[in-house]
Length: 395
Image (cartoon, rainbow, N blue to C red; front, side, top):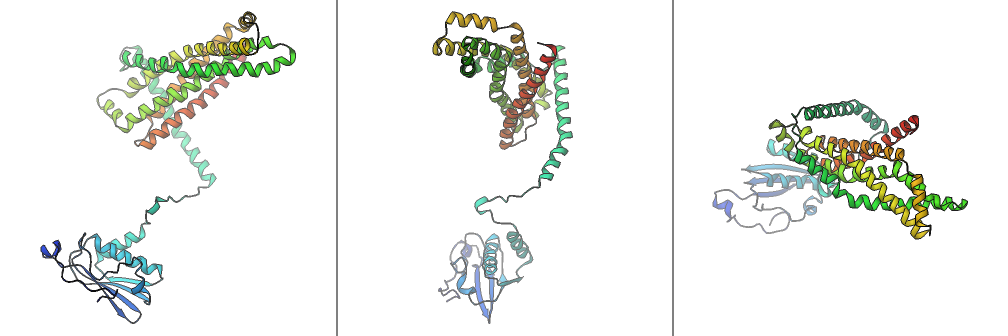
């Protein structure tokens, strides 16, 4: 019988005995209030040691002990199975406040057991939340500004050099890539642009008629929709759509290529990633965004016409006449200018985030999110700047 109250099994007859090894054994000895765990034999994975209690807490042998000593007696070869049992003893003793001495174990085993107890368990995979002072956050953001500015300037400089190589006919930008990007940024974007622009026209007409009805001037809602869509709303809604659709796609595609080391392969082959990936997207989006803005203007005016003539009961010909009066080429050119700038901002932001992406799946998601957020911020800032410029020029 062992100290756990179980019969001691006979000699090991398994694979360990066949290899000439001795069975692993734990012998528990009591010396007053002290408990000694004596390890002997050859400890191999897959071989159950003799004399070890099945109770994980070792509550029976440790119930009346004040100290626990882990020692080795005729210990042969050992592996991580010995360490697992030692860690089990240590944790059970620590839970009861019992002092433990492992001086009798081999030095390598002692070091590994201490290392195992030092590293926290991964059960539940709970991450420790560390509170960072707000001043540390602000300081980190301030310190990152120079490096970010340096990266942006380097990116813009490489883009300008790439445009120069394109004009000289020495660029890796191919016509096939440009046409593919044109298709992605134009025809494939028409359904969502149509839907959003039509609904924006609906909203402008409904909101405008609420105030104009107070003065009996409902017919002027046609001019309101025409001016609002052609001057700014068509361009802004198209830019936001392209930022969430096309700009995010640019960041995700180029970021995935970064993760798969395809950008490194292009560089090794002597192909500039900015020429091969950035320039086609920049040219395509800059060229197609103004055309999509014109299409969005048309769909928005159509949405306002549906509300005015179909829901509010305004005369269709009168609505058309007042739409023409409110429509101006200066407003149309202002909208096209906005669309051109938006296309450049979205393309540059999406490609920049993709080229600066890390080398993990999480980094691709982060780059895609940043592309959308920074593109929208760029659209808002450029809108404010262009509006101020147009007011100065009286456009």
